[in-house]
Amino acid sequence: KQKTAYEIMPSLVGSEMCIRDSYNNKKSYKATILSDGSISYKNERGSIHKIAAKVNKTSSFNGWDYWHYEDKKKNLICIDEIRKKMRS
Image (cartoon, rainbow, N blue to C red; front, side, top):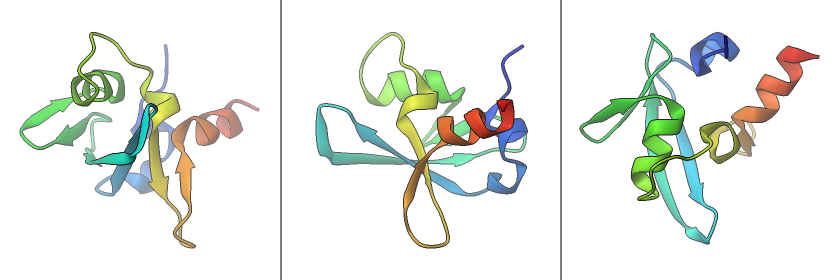
């Protein structure tokens, strides 16, 4: 079973993540991580993949690669980097 965003980084619950459009770096979207591991964006709620697909107007999207969070130094960190650390 693939881990949810919440299982990877429980301290991120309630925080905002930012997704960058891979074709246009000037575009960004913010979503909030919910306690059940889903995320919310505007009036939408779903998996990191479902919401990434929605904002990018496609049927599927790899949310692990495109969702980022801001660390204490204001750097954007891809949540897939957290997943890689948890797996090693």
